[in-house]
Image (cartoon, rainbow, N blue to C red; front, side, top):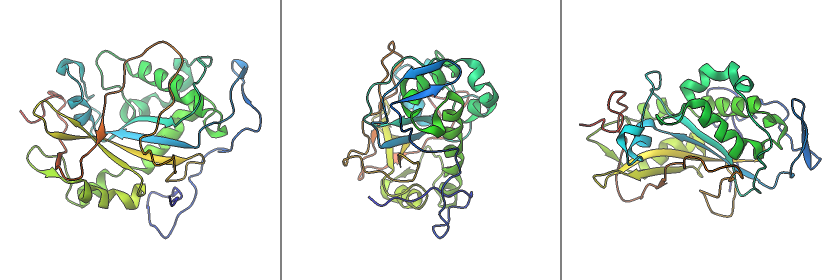
Length: 275
């Protein structure tokens, strides 16, 4: 699969492709990393080669929940939000690097807007903590993500880099209760920005309609666009070894021949934006 390099500038011109400037994105040579806050901890070397950066549409997320009272969309959220940054096919992470509120406190305002919990039963910090323990601790074998602060900083940088909302609007693809879209027309808009390997995912709502839920963007170990993980675009995100947590909502690739809906956000009725 062809790899495109992440652009540093907001403009994603195909003629100007340079590495996203991130601190020391290299794999450690040791089979462990140093956590200077908690001391040395044993850790496997990076067994993963690819990550999925996954963004979700809040109105689609709400359609994935059986209980409509569970969903909430904060008033400040009017755009695509981060679902996660997940290493694929790695060994299980040890539950040995705890995360505290103070670790990401300086990012809290940005995280509340771009990486919020959309469940009433789960605070945003609980969501972030679970993402770190399940996925971030495995990503931490890469220097640029080797702390909770750096891991979430990378997620926020990628979210800014892949802000495709305007590109969709410019192409006439806007949230609607009446007009459905086909995978091909959306893919043609997103491919120049996200590469050919991105996956457009849907959920099926209670009226058996396909509803746009999220986009999965494959990245290589050094955070360049595109990654060959044996033809399995969804892959297997790392599973933590800690206690069971609330599961991610299930999604599936939007069927190519069946139009899907891109529902508008309704902060008052997040589960029923079109009633």
